[in-house]
Length: 129
Image 1 (cartoon, rainbow, N blue to C red):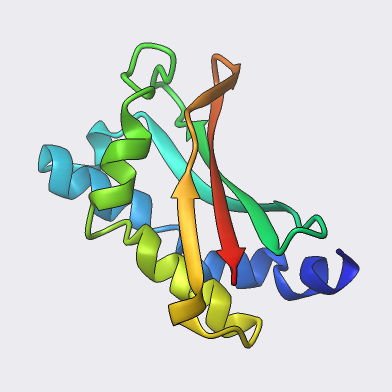
Image 2 (cartoon, rainbow, N blue to C red):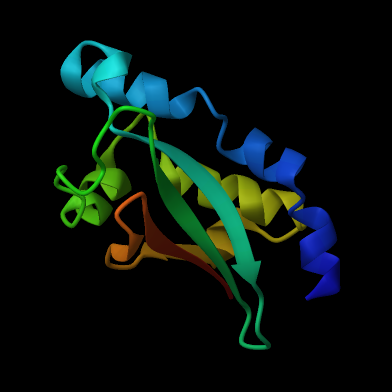
Protein backbone atom coordinates (compact mmCIF):
# COMPACT_ATOMS: atom_id res chain seq x y z
CA UNK A 1 0.00 0.00 0.00
CA UNK A 2 2.78 2.46 0.91
CA UNK A 3 4.48 1.80 -2.43
CA UNK A 4 1.30 2.72 -4.31
CA UNK A 5 0.63 5.74 -2.10
CA UNK A 6 4.07 7.06 -3.03
CA UNK A 7 3.47 6.39 -6.74
CA UNK A 8 0.00 7.95 -6.75
CA UNK A 9 0.95 11.27 -5.17
CA UNK A 10 -1.28 14.31 -5.67
CA UNK A 11 0.99 15.48 -8.52
CA UNK A 12 0.87 12.07 -10.22
CA UNK A 13 -2.92 11.93 -9.92
CA UNK A 14 -3.20 15.43 -11.39
CA UNK A 15 -1.01 14.30 -14.29
CA UNK A 16 -3.23 11.24 -14.83
CA UNK A 17 -6.43 13.31 -14.70
CA UNK A 18 -5.57 17.00 -15.26
CA UNK A 19 -7.60 19.65 -13.47
CA UNK A 20 -8.67 21.30 -16.74
CA UNK A 21 -10.34 18.07 -17.92
CA UNK A 22 -13.54 19.05 -16.04
CA UNK A 23 -13.74 22.29 -18.01
CA UNK A 24 -13.12 20.45 -21.27
CA UNK A 25 -15.88 17.97 -20.39
CA UNK A 26 -18.42 20.69 -19.59
CA UNK A 27 -17.42 22.72 -22.62
CA UNK A 28 -18.16 19.68 -24.82
CA UNK A 29 -21.35 18.88 -22.92
CA UNK A 30 -22.86 22.35 -22.60
CA UNK A 31 -20.80 24.54 -24.93
CA UNK A 32 -19.61 26.51 -21.90
CA UNK A 33 -17.31 25.20 -19.17
CA UNK A 34 -18.82 27.61 -16.62
CA UNK A 35 -22.11 25.69 -16.81
CA UNK A 36 -20.56 22.74 -14.98
CA UNK A 37 -21.66 22.29 -11.37
CA UNK A 38 -18.59 20.36 -10.22
CA UNK A 39 -14.92 19.66 -10.72
CA UNK A 40 -13.75 16.09 -11.25
CA UNK A 41 -10.69 15.04 -9.23
CA UNK A 42 -8.97 11.64 -9.25
CA UNK A 43 -8.15 10.27 -5.79
CA UNK A 44 -6.20 7.14 -4.84
CA UNK A 45 -8.01 5.06 -2.19
CA UNK A 46 -5.88 1.97 -1.75
CA UNK A 47 -4.58 -1.35 -3.03
CA UNK A 48 -5.66 -4.43 -1.13
CA UNK A 49 -3.89 -7.71 -1.78
CA UNK A 50 -6.22 -8.80 -4.60
CA UNK A 51 -4.33 -6.97 -7.40
CA UNK A 52 -6.97 -4.27 -7.61
CA UNK A 53 -6.16 -0.58 -7.31
CA UNK A 54 -8.98 1.51 -5.90
CA UNK A 55 -9.53 5.12 -6.91
CA UNK A 56 -12.43 7.57 -6.79
CA UNK A 57 -13.52 10.23 -9.18
CA UNK A 58 -14.55 12.98 -6.79
CA UNK A 59 -17.27 15.35 -7.98
CA UNK A 60 -16.63 18.55 -6.01
CA UNK A 61 -19.28 21.24 -6.12
CA UNK A 62 -18.15 24.50 -7.71
CA UNK A 63 -18.75 27.78 -5.86
CA UNK A 64 -22.21 29.14 -6.55
CA UNK A 65 -23.37 25.89 -8.16
CA UNK A 66 -25.59 23.10 -6.87
CA UNK A 67 -24.15 19.61 -7.12
CA UNK A 68 -27.21 18.09 -5.44
CA UNK A 69 -29.46 19.66 -8.11
CA UNK A 70 -27.58 17.97 -10.95
CA UNK A 71 -28.05 14.49 -12.30
CA UNK A 72 -25.00 12.61 -11.03
CA UNK A 73 -26.31 9.07 -10.71
CA UNK A 74 -26.15 8.24 -14.42
CA UNK A 75 -22.63 9.57 -14.71
CA UNK A 76 -20.64 6.32 -14.44
CA UNK A 77 -22.10 5.20 -17.77
CA UNK A 78 -21.44 8.62 -19.35
CA UNK A 79 -17.95 8.88 -17.86
CA UNK A 80 -16.98 5.40 -19.05
CA UNK A 81 -17.66 6.34 -22.68
CA UNK A 82 -16.81 10.04 -22.89
CA UNK A 83 -13.68 10.61 -25.02
CA UNK A 84 -12.58 13.75 -23.18
CA UNK A 85 -12.60 12.02 -19.79
CA UNK A 86 -10.95 8.96 -21.39
CA UNK A 87 -11.24 6.69 -18.35
CA UNK A 88 -9.82 3.77 -20.36
CA UNK A 89 -6.80 5.93 -21.14
CA UNK A 90 -6.44 6.86 -17.47
CA UNK A 91 -6.49 3.15 -16.54
CA UNK A 92 -3.81 2.44 -19.17
CA UNK A 93 -1.64 5.27 -17.82
CA UNK A 94 -2.05 3.90 -14.28
CA UNK A 95 -0.85 0.48 -15.46
CA UNK A 96 2.08 2.04 -17.29
CA UNK A 97 3.01 4.13 -14.25
CA UNK A 98 3.39 0.99 -12.12
CA UNK A 99 5.07 -1.02 -14.89
CA UNK A 100 2.13 -3.34 -15.60
CA UNK A 101 1.15 -4.37 -19.17
CA UNK A 102 -1.88 -2.38 -20.30
CA UNK A 103 -3.31 -5.41 -22.11
CA UNK A 104 -3.46 -7.23 -18.77
CA UNK A 105 -5.48 -4.52 -17.08
CA UNK A 106 -9.22 -3.99 -16.80
CA UNK A 107 -11.14 -1.16 -15.21
CA UNK A 108 -14.61 -0.46 -13.90
CA UNK A 109 -16.63 2.47 -12.61
CA UNK A 110 -19.02 1.85 -9.73
CA UNK A 111 -22.23 3.67 -8.88
CA UNK A 112 -22.26 7.28 -7.73
CA UNK A 113 -22.02 7.74 -3.98
CA UNK A 114 -23.21 10.86 -2.20
CA UNK A 115 -20.92 11.92 0.64
CA UNK A 116 -22.65 15.28 1.10
CA UNK A 117 -24.60 17.79 -0.95
CA UNK A 118 -21.22 19.27 -2.00
CA UNK A 119 -19.34 16.04 -2.70
CA UNK A 120 -20.19 12.91 -4.65
CA UNK A 121 -17.80 10.19 -5.80
CA UNK A 122 -17.64 7.42 -8.35
CA UNK A 123 -15.55 4.37 -7.44
CA UNK A 124 -12.94 3.54 -10.10
CA UNK A 125 -11.12 0.23 -9.90
CA UNK A 126 -8.19 -0.96 -11.97
CA UNK A 127 -7.62 -4.73 -11.86
CA UNK A 128 -4.19 -6.10 -12.73
CA UNK A 129 -4.06 -9.59 -14.29
